Length: 374
Image (cartoon, rainbow, N blue to C red):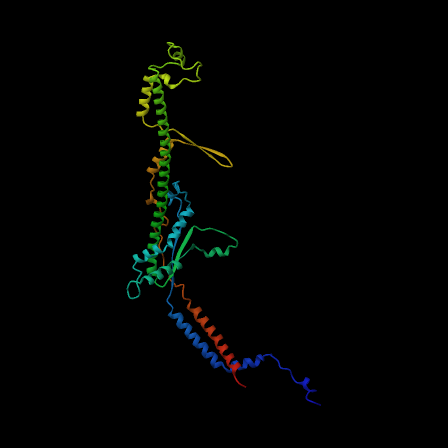
């Protein structure tokens, strides 16, 4: 029988792994695996102990009530809501300019040696703090047990992690004060700016009414002057009528028919001179102006009254905002430092480093088995 006839009886090569043999080979390298695992555990513990403790410094405050921000809500120049005012305040809490001022006030922009930070270091520190500040509704653990309940709380949490919690609490308290002042200043400037805009608009409308009145009076003066010239030319001194003028002495004949209305020159030079004198020396009388606005949908008629405009101007000029009674947080609100640190979780770091070191040790042992010669 030839070798070719017996070829089918040879065992075929297989890719199966003998798990038992693999485990025995790994156990044989227990010293390597245990050694690497212990080294990893030691390194993890060392790193956990070397990391500084970080505390979550937090200030919790209520949303401002309508009474606290009443001057802002009562004015009508810029409609404001409670939520809009709160949004402006929270936005200022993350303002880098205000954070820098708060840090500067508490002398926190220095290094470990007490030297002032360079501009680059200063910028990086302020940016990191701004990004690390967390503003969110205050959370309550008991709410997690109530399924499907959606509730809104009026408490806001301002917090940040810090390895120097005492100094952080100081500049956070200062930041709350600066944000309150800045919010009031910003909103006051917007409101007073809108007041000035509306005063300018009222003045413009009054100027338009005055210009219209001046043009109308000038037209009336020219009309009386023309009538006076005709009356002088006709030698009409006293008031008369068209009939008397035509059929008077028989020496004046203007028209053969009675006109539809009496002309002003029939008043005579004496009356016309008096009317002209009074009109030229009297103050301008502003009249209501009607503005018609036409659109595709409708025609709107608006009447502008001079007295209404003058009253509006006087009201706007007398307007003032009592910013002293505005408050966004209660005076008792302070940033507090917890008793225990939030980071690092040293137990978790030690356990994770030990487990990772163990897996790494097994991986090294498997590589040794793969490259080991028979």
